[in-house]
Image (cartoon, rainbow, N blue to C red; front, side, top):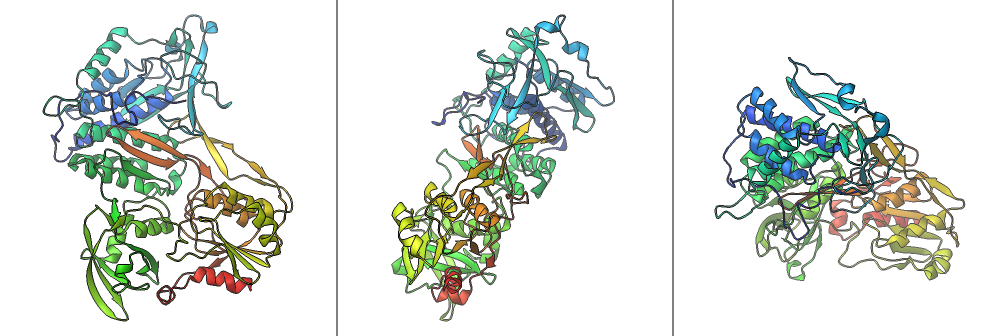
Length: 610
């Protein structure tokens, strides 16, 4: 089930609300503004995702931008409470917002129609979060809705449901609380109680009469507008707050993340500034799948790169490969990068990692992969040290920038085949295994080395597991959250258990897998079976520590956020997230080995295989 799809399209056309200002009116937020925005943001998420009234809008982004337009100018708590009621009562008439000093109470009588036996119960069910414009395993439905226009249709997706009488009572800012019923009575004609149609129409008109415009009066939805930035924070923060399964591993509480993002949004001046704000907002979630993109064509920070591959060894940033033959006379494998654009290479890497999310090993790998990226047709200054001395070079960013590269990548790759007599080598990130290889080469080998420093080339790689098994096994690593309550509380999970059966021919050779931090997601699914069922010896470095299906958030202004939406564990129930697959034999490459062109992880496997 998808929601709110009309306000953005892949073409980037937006149908949103209007606001007359495009420039920032406030250099820094006042404490009053932050208080207003945080209160609105929390109530927004509770109502959108956990209150099932029919009056709810199809395009919640409309409410987000309109709401922040109002929050910016509110002067005191009386006005704040009044405005929150003005915004939310027309779309959620059963919701209450009140001062703690003047408490209101949940009333089942107010939710019960005169003849409840003729009504059904309507409530939200979220299997993960079903979000607009992204087809995946995640779904969100309102129960007992099948085909009405103004609702989000769908059959029940799991057994657990909230019932009429359950409600949230929570403080949305100090001194102000809300009551949000989780379930309502409903018929085909609509939910009960009904909102006043006059107030609903008035709100709709107010929303539609102030769309953001540029100085020429043309519609403009962009990250250079403060209210769009605040709306994006509200939308993204609530989705993550209520559906992200790894909050226990976050580096910062959700409330602090929200406050920091709001503060930065006020000082941002450009769409690129806000792109970094979103990255900084998401980085503390420590999710290696988490990425933020701006698809309006204005972000050029990763368009190009210098033709070098970097790695880290013995605490130093080292040249692993030189991709331009014209540079070979100047730069060699094993050269140490001392500085990048007049900043120490260590600090440059830390700055890059600060915008990334995930485990320590993933952020280091990703940071090194993107460290030399920048706009096209630009140069980068490097100071390098080697046995030949120290030199400063200005190097053109002459190759396409990349955000990912297999850890096994070499300018002179090792071909699949007999790497030594009786030892067969296959790079699962580059090579597809044929049936003939299984029947002939692999069955005659005394040892087989599978290189999975990277992402599998295709699903054929998973057949390796079956050729190593002697009996069927059951994997139980993925768990999709069943969400009916906010703040990711009282969660149950749907298990996605699978059975893997043996395939012939069975491989009787000694088996070795190579891996490192570039192995993420699907690679870790494969390696988890290898590790948990003791099918091979794993050599190298810990994998990324990120697995599970991605969910996607599309935001006004053409920002996109991808994040992990389901929980992953090892087959024995132990923790996978951040830890990754730990090799049986850890190998840390050395500066000397890199300088000599050695693949020290592969060499360790060969020593063990002989």
